[in-house]
Image (cartoon, rainbow, N blue to C red; front, side, top):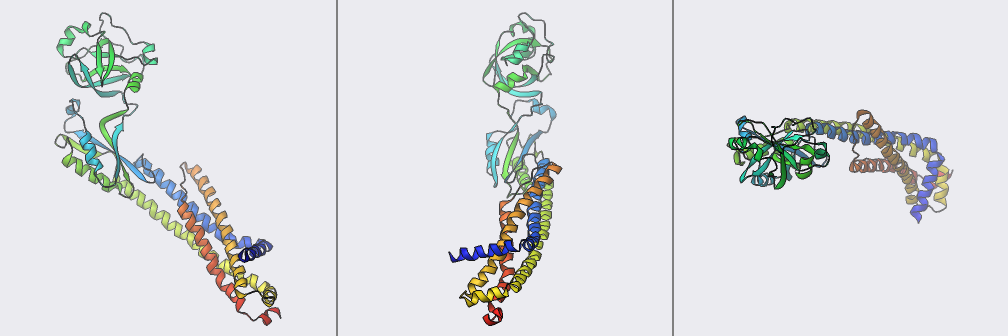
Length: 401
């Protein structure tokens, strides 16, 4: 109860000298606002730039894509997978890796490769996606064959065109028998509605409506692998470990080369540069807090000199030295707490304004905000201690004289 009374008295004193208190708080507000702004904008801009190099990076994790490039261009048409489950398990064993998954297929890619089973023949075949009626209309004039219709696209019907060479030269000789057959793609049954002309050397075997493909097949492929790892590990180090491991132990290590799709070294360098700049400017902003502490000390000294008789009367009426000292300490603490709150809000508003202009999201850091506010409180207590101590050391008779 005694503490609350002393604090209420300190608040009244601060309000009584409102203009002086505000000018004293102004330095603290500017210092804290600058720290919050610099840290929030710096972190947001760093993440925005990192996403340019590593599009799926965030505050805690980074995702990179690992791809496999065959030694020969023709090799990619063979029936094999760039990555298998053993490769994924191998990557998961690397320290710092949190998640490994097949990369999602690009939506604008017109060709896919799936496991196809037809007339007891099973192999990976290339599929062309048909986004509209204008694509893939050229077919052989066969019995019972029909053109692709708008309803096939809208209703996502399970219909396909197949190559005249889907079963080799034998299928071309009796292409009429292909129409109306059922062909199995990744376990799903599709109706063959037509046959398009092809050569024995063509890798394109099937044409399918794009919407149908999106409906019946997941958007994942074994062509690339996404690796998500903690930001405690540098991107350059992780990419080096990934490529070294896969090129020495990967399932296709002798058939081509594993390599990342991003430059981890550049991402690390850029991240370290932004972190260093943010830290440097934060320290510059923090210096203003200590400079503002001198203003707090000056205000307390001025307040003591103006209230000398008040202090003497309170001491004569029985107020202890501790009570008098606490009041002036609380006055300094009140000023710094209010300045800390206002500075934090102003810093966030300024950071938001800057991020809107530069078109990226600012990232507030609660830990930094708490440190800045606590630092301002410490400044208030430290710089208020000596003036408040001086107020209690004077003789009571001299104070009331």
